[in-house]
Length: 268
Image (cartoon, rainbow, N blue to C red; front, side, top):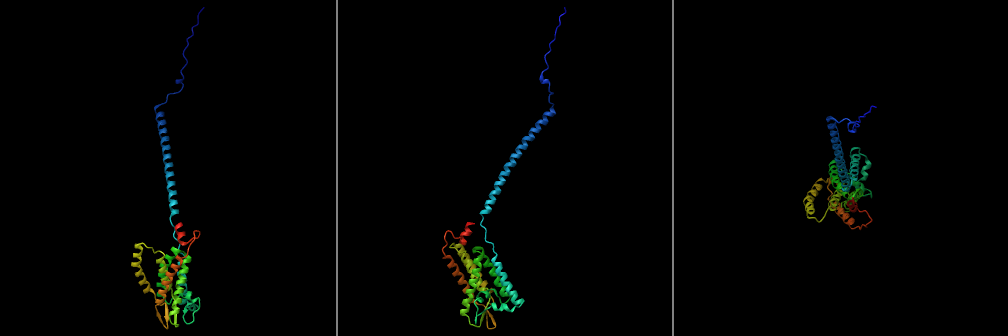
């Protein structure tokens, strides 16, 4: 009986079940991995830059909030506009009722002590006064506020007219903002005055020059008879009243709960 012989061959290995990767496939996978790693690094770098930028922006916003904001000057422009409007109505449109706003020393009305500070005799008188009103009034408003500007203008101008009415002859007629100009000049200097020697030297050097220019620019603030004269009494009176206002306000005690102008400015 014939014997059957079986030839047992080993089963094929699994290693040969998958094809071997080619060289091009290997290079493509390596480049893909490098691209992925570079993209991740770039994203991390952008994230860090974004965080730094956001922190820098936040610091800028905080610094901007901490910067002191100066008062916005609006009242001074209303004063200038009122002076100019009254001049146009008086000299261009020649509205006769404007003449009732002058201060007539013979028989004054109470409101004329205030209204005459907004009236002017001619264009040179108006332009010179408004120039100095703008310079010194803007300083006062930025330092003390809108209400302080109006009160300083009215009190110094009306006070100068009152003293002029007491001293000058009854035939005089007063008009112009020169008294208020000197009052605003004095207030603007004193509110910024300190015992620093540099500030004192600055006032001594510039103060005399400014006073001389204001004196030269003051024209026709008083009409005596038929002639125009410079009312030096109003100039000196306005300056003294301005100094008195600063002194009186500085003597007013402010409690811790009150918002004084200085406290409000420092807290910003």
